[in-house]
Structures are given as structure tokens and as C-alpha cells.
Image (cartoon, rainbow, N blue to C red; front, side):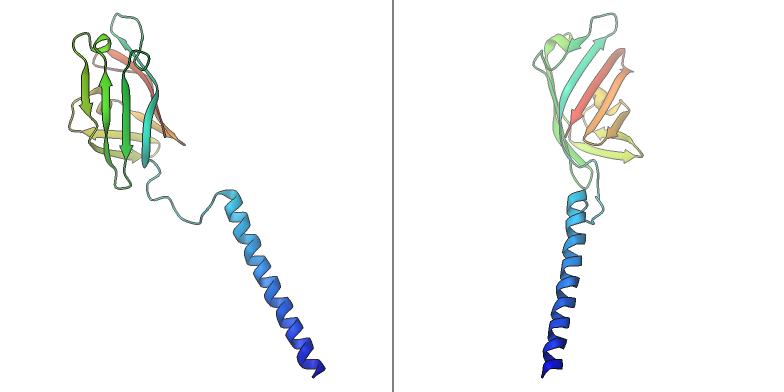
Length: 152
């Protein structure tokens, strides 16, 4: 009977150690932020312009956000995009502009290319993806220079 009790204690100890080891590994993975899954689309998410400056040719820089403009783009896991570009008249030099950002986004290395039905500068710029931002810095398109930071 004594051997039977000792074997049970040894089995319980071994089971407890194995359980503890698994818990320790799971805790380490959680602490590192690694859920063990590969992100199917690292650019997926909702982005809002936190910096949006335009310098039209021969003019002073315009802070689009302080003038009431906005750029919001949501990128789905399947790369489809939705959102809106709003430019006030002070930026366009004519009438305020609102354009849909419906289309697609493609990540190529650290670059992002937007392809939308609306013909705006957004699809003409070469965007860079870093962590939680998609951005352009002093890029010229159509005679204007753009600095835009989209933050997720």
C-alpha cells in the first residue's frame, strides 16, 4: 500500500510540474504579446489623418486638419478600403471636396499603394507603412506637396 501512495504522489508531482511548465510558457508568450498567430494583413485597421499638410505650387503650406479637412481610411483584412477624404475650399482653391476612399490597398514590403475609384492624390502617392502608421512626407503630386500621417 505504501508503494501505491508514493507512486500517486510522484504522479501528482509530475503532473503539477508539467502543468506549471505549460503555464509558464503561455505566460511568457502573453507577456511578449505573441499569440502564436501570424497576422494575415498587418495593414488592416481604421486609420485617421493625425497630420495632413498640403503645399500647393507657389503657395504657403496649409494645415488641412485645422481648416476642417479630414482623411479617414479603413482597410479590411481582404485589403478592401472604405472611408472619406474631405478637403475644404481653402485647400482646393474652389469648392470643398468630398471623395470616397472605397477601393483597395496593397502592402508591398513597407510600401502601401491605394487604388480607389475616386481620382484623388491619395492613390498617386507612395505611402510607407510603419507599425501603426501609413504616411507620406513632402511628396509632390499634381503640383502640390503632401505630408500626411494616417494613424491606426
